Length: 193
Image 1 (cartoon, rainbow, N blue to C red):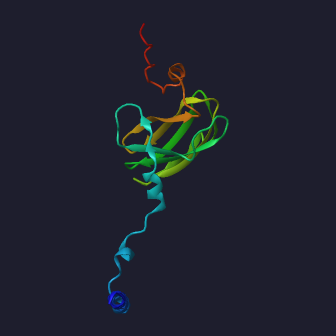
Image 2: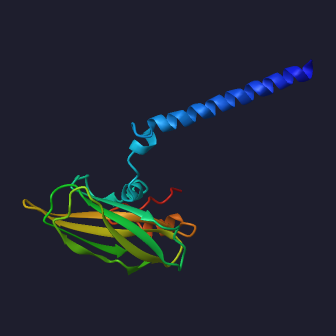
Image 3: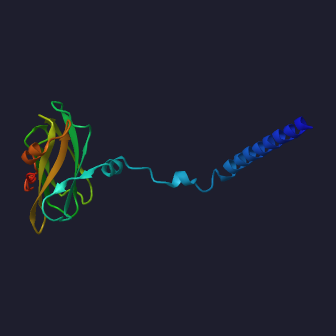
């Protein structure tokens, strides 16, 4: 009796599986010329949008202006004595006649490639302009790459300054941090007695 019941459930499960498979086959043939499947209607992810989503905003000096954005992404963790690339995206957020950028490595870093971005005429609004820097950390610590973006529009010329922070090796102590603070930042206070 036990084996008969077990066989009955096995046959029932097999029948349900076959019915489900035959139903899938009919749906595929019936819907082949009809509406596209939900996965076919989804817009494929744009590689540039995905890259921007992984980037971090550079630290701007002064209050946010909203006319230019600068984002960055490190390709690898900075190691002392080894070159590392920094991918940048300069994004004009308004109509501009010209856009130009320069980059300078702070103390403890050597900038080996990408110190200037070519001048662009009438860059498209909201479209990221890619640029790559190559830097070599000279010692462990927290360092900064400075960026100055110059932009001319029909009504004004603006200069925006940004800092890109980097931690090389194991980081730094409080003394070294005061030596490598970004421009305009206050040095940390000395501990009291």
